[in-house]
Image (cartoon, rainbow, N blue to C red; front, side):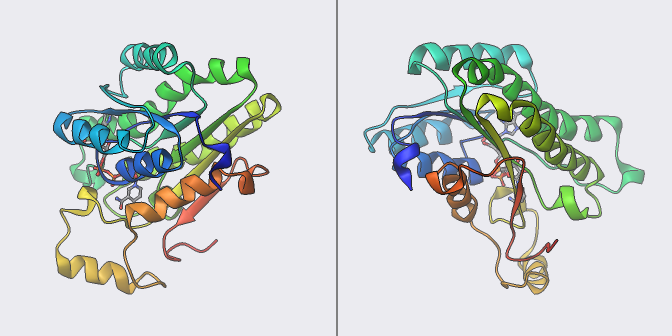
Length: 250
Ligand code: NDP
């Protein structure tokens, strides 16, 4: 499975924690060099770099706000010159700010749209010409089931993630002839700090609605990333893959 990833260079956004961290560890374990960004949690990012470099691969963490295109461009240029290129982009950074629409301010709306959807646009925009020139590249966007089924209190987040799903399909059609594949993963409920606000009782309730009757782990998502980057998935593009224990069935 690892043969296509070994010695490649991947950029992972929001790699310091949760799902992004699991993706960084998975890719590095398969012999891929990884540059990831964090937003605020430098300590967690530095600890991850230490852990990853034990695998004899290169790893670098940078403080980058994915909402800011100029910061993103500077980062991707730095990765290209430092690592010698970029082969893989994982757009994972994301936030929630759940509120009923009647209570949601323009700022609550905009921050979620700008981080999830705007961040995906910014980092992809910064990498796409490199991928087109080299006539290869893999892009995986971390979306959410919320962008497919909708969830109350998440109009901002559902709109952003639904936008990512549509962005994935449009871009996949646009760049397929350049040898670039673009896919998305839509996780269900995954145990990370994003779910920290929910009580154990609420989590038990979530499990009742999941056919496989458990919450997902960051590794469940990272394993699907590895599959999409493997030789076994080279005919897949423009897909939104649910990793959700069966929560959404289409
Ligand atoms: P976490 O809250 O655990 O981690 C979020 C990551 O994004 C952190 O690395 C954080 O950096 C980074 N980040 C946040 N804002 C910015 C920003 N403005 N610029 C750059 N980086 C930023 O989230 P998860 O691991 O749970 O989620 C990862 C992805 O998976 C998100 O896109 C999320 O929407 C999606 N997802 C998660 C689900 C879940 O149940 N957990 C379900 C479905 C989808 P820092 O550590 O520095 O703050």
